Length: 275
Image (tube, rainbow, N blue to C red; front, side, top):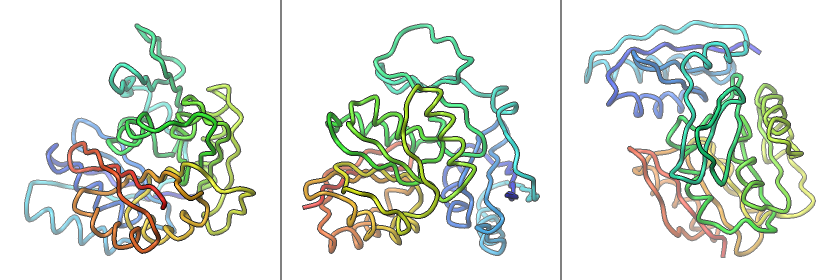
């Protein structure tokens, strides 16, 4: 599979909002750097005109430059290892590569070696999802990780004591990467390729976690609910606080009640319960 890569030079305060806007134009993975960030989109998902519109709009507000190129699928571990540092979520969770030596112990340790997959703990939404997961009892629960990326949230669910964890992603590259990360963490978690509409799970789930983007979440919400038990928990992220109202327009008619949300920068993770 081929990817489109965008290299953006911008000031730090515009990095997050540009990434959120570009996510709506098909970009699904981002990596911050000293000059701004790089982003990647599958060729089939990439929206060239939407990307140009976003960049032109923000170029009127701040100094920025960008370049878009098409690249072959590649393992980005070499570049990632040069810049990657472990991520710590409070004193509970350490997210690290297999080559890192942690200076102290943590209750929950997740080893992640990404390829072209989203979810290393460096993005706010991944951290927010994990923080929300820490507040929910996973013991003996069935958990589904929708759009698993690197598999980081599925791994977290199993560490929190879930009885069964399943996962899926539409992208073959993510499926393969998540398999490797499950093995790296000595876990056997099923992962399937496709959309949730194409899945055929044997039983509904007590907890469903989805860190994707606003448009996908809105489109797939009915399918999430169809695969949840009454009283089940739904954790969402991949959107801004200002998008919560749009999400609730879809969740409320389906019987999902918002419990709370947490925030980092402009990004949020929202907790719903299915009544």
